[in-house]
Image (cartoon, rainbow, N blue to C red; front, side):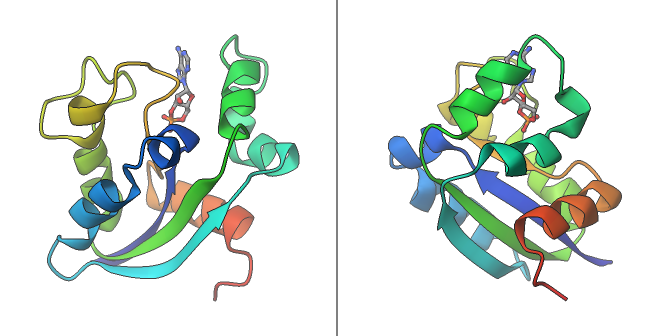
Length: 137
Ligand code: CMP
C-alpha cells in the first residue's frame, strides 16, 4: 500500500554532516521516492504544533530549543509501507537502545539529539505534512 510520511533530519544530523548518509539509506529502498525536500530553520510556532502532544513534559522546552538551534532537512517520502519502513530504518527514540544498523543505533547516543524524526502512523503523517508542507495536495 503506497503511503507518504514526514521525515525531519534534526539539527544534529545537519551539523554533523550526516544528511547524505541518512538520505542515502532512505533513497536506497526499492520504490521509495522523495516528494519534497527542504533545508529550513524551524520557528517555535511550527514546533509547538508539531510536538503538541509533548507540551508541558519535562523534555519539551529543551527539545524546542534544540530543534530550533540550526536548520533541519524536512522531507516527504512516498512509497510502499513507508510509514512503518522509515520508523524501522530510524530505530527507537533512545539511540543506545536502538539496534546497530538503524540510523539512531549507528550514529546516536543522546535521546534528545537522535538525528531524525519520522511520523509514527498514517494519521500522524497527514497531520504533520499539513504543518510542514501545507501546499502539498
Ligand atoms: P521523536 O521521537 O522524533 O519526537 C519526540 C522527541 O522528543 C524525541 O524524538 C526526542 O528528540 C525527544 N525526547 C523524547 N523523550 C525524551 C526524553 N526523555 N529526554 C529528552 N528528549 C526526549
